[in-house]
Amino acid sequence: GFSRRGDKKIIGDLGDYELINILNIVLDIMKYIVLVYICVIDINKKIIPEKGFLTLMIIGLLKSLINNNIAGYYLGICAFSMPLLILYIAEDYVKKELIGFGDIKLMMALGGIFTYKTLEEIIRFYMLLYILSGIFTIFLIFYLKIKKKKIEYIPFSPFIVIMYAIFGCLERG
Image (cartoon, rainbow, N blue to C red; front, side, top):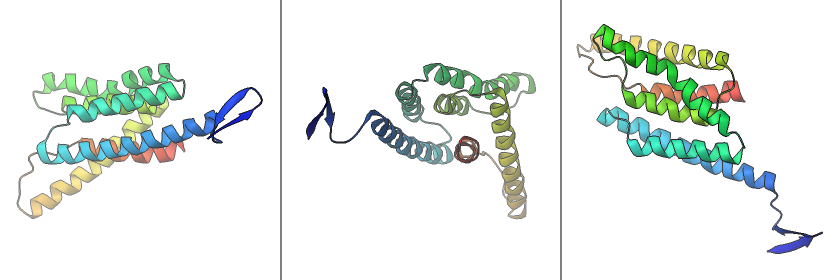
């Protein structure tokens, strides 16, 4: 209910700080549900769904508005997606599909959620991402050779999502 303290009405005992924390927690829960959904769809259908991408973009925008960091949101979208965008452009020169545009969109959304801090952070993120995905891919190739199966498609989004979760815990505390 409402109570009066001085001239200000307070709803229950929730202050601005607690409300911001609750909103951030709710958005984080929604974010991880969407990330799992994106991985499942990418593994099964070889596509990153547009509604998952847009939901993550909205979650990032809401988090940036709540935390008063709209510039970090915008810069995160640009900076975190740039390495994958360069790789996507390089496909024209090597005449082989290296990465899908859905992966770039996923990285844009996650970059907006991460927000931009430093270039060093982005380099560390991608170093760890490529190491993780490279090691897993090598093991998968050896496993499939033993089973005498041909590898057709390795979705990149699960690696991006796993690295996002690991990096978020390790680097961002």
